[in-house]
Image (cartoon, rainbow, N blue to C red; front, side):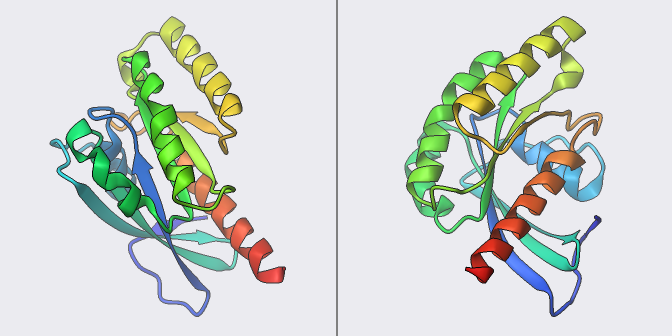
Length: 187
């Protein structure tokens, strides 16, 4: 499986993935790391940012439009309109501020309310480079519990700064989306 900026193929499947979570957890920085493989500190997102990337999944090319939504409260009322029509979602929290996970149920509720109930959602715990091993274990246990309790498609701990663990959640979500689309087209 590989990712690239654009691949032209008859097997291209275009989808939308919403990226959500509280402000300041590093959603935009994670997307920049995924896109460029470099750490590019982001400024506060105003409204929504977009990133389009192609990902090869088996014989399919998945063209994903990532809708990176601002996490600040003043933009939250616009979120339902932006998240409609998604094929998947990434929700993020800051492992150095574990309390940011407490805001995720509301984001997940809005995502599910405005999409199909089986929409795959992957949990990202960012900024693991800023915590010690003990706090990393606590974050991993909390993320695993949260993922199970909220019926998520999995969780990943990662660092936009170091790049550690950034590729895997994007690849995982892409595989799930392609498999869902295949099942839907055979029904």
